[in-house]
Amino acid sequence: MKTGIIHPSLTSGNNVSIGNFCVIEENVILGDDVQIGNLVTIEPDVQIMNRVKIGHKVTLKSGTRIADDSVFDDHCVSTGVCYVGKNVNVRTGAIISRSTIIEDNCFIGPGVITNHTKHVSHAREKSVPNVVLLTYISYASIV
View 1 (cartoon, rainbow, N blue to C red):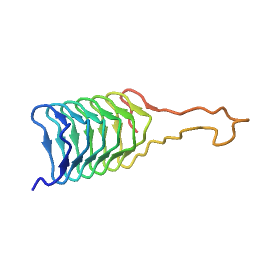
View 2 (view 1 turned 135 degrees about the vertical axis):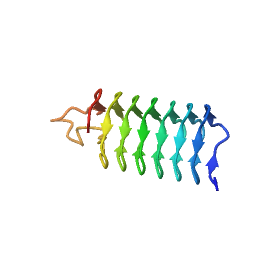
View 3 (view 1 turned 45 degrees about the horizontal axis):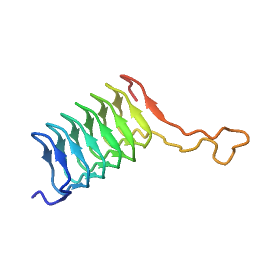
């Protein structure tokens, strides 16, 4: 069947498998042995390295980086610029928000949602410093 939209600027390695009805936008890089399920949307400027498995109905927003040997399971979403390290397992329905760094060898359980709050102060600058947050999940964590 293989109906979908793949931008001609796609750069892909060897042995890449792309499922049915996928949308892959411009400036996407796929490494070797990448498997992408059905109904996946990959926005511009996403990099997926070697031996990564992307499940069905996944959305990867612009700026997402997924390192070698990781799994991004069915119904998962990244919401913007984020980094998923090597050998990371992101299970069904998880949402990885922008400004999230997940180090190598982590496990993100089903339905986990990382939080991104752009500014901590929320209009309380006099009592709370205006700080940009970053979600950081350290090496080999289980969330």
